[in-house]
Length: 226
Image 1 (cartoon, helix red, strand yellow):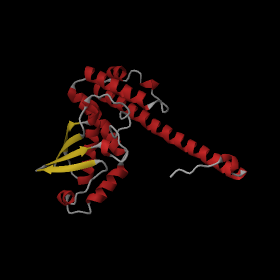
Image 2: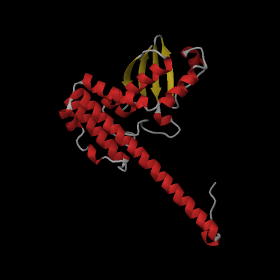
Image 3: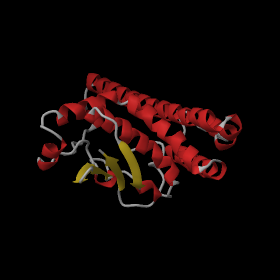
Image 4: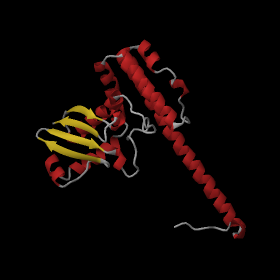
């Protein structure tokens, strides 16, 4: 319901309160946007650090060309376009095994920054006798995901377009563009999924990235080998 306010007829104190509310709201929103931007800049730096770690400084400089233009206040589409280009340069300069290792380690870092999310998932699963009972109850480990077990393989599906706030991808670095991004980038998610499920199940798992929305599929699909 929308309530119309006749600004000319309200009192001086009410006008002041309205102005203060709008100012506080705009300030809070701008701070939230800026903090999101700072996180994205840190994520880009993490990519650069892992490129140098596994492929060397020369490759890092070539792949990360132009990253200095990405700041906390950068347009998100501009940031996503830069990431798309960086992945194309990474594909051209580095072998597949090393590319995967680089991006998986970015995912490991992301998992370490989302420990509270992992702890909530662990608590949810511990209410059941095991993963099979959890699946029988029709529960979801995370919003916007679903699980299907076939033998010793647990298939995890991400469906971000069906999320509460529909999006192309859960990752804020790339979800602002419609173009496809190299599957290389999505090995970051693979790294996250690996650390997430190892923590939740409290044992090692192997994860395979099968498809992703950012590379053209309708949903992301991972095979978790138990």
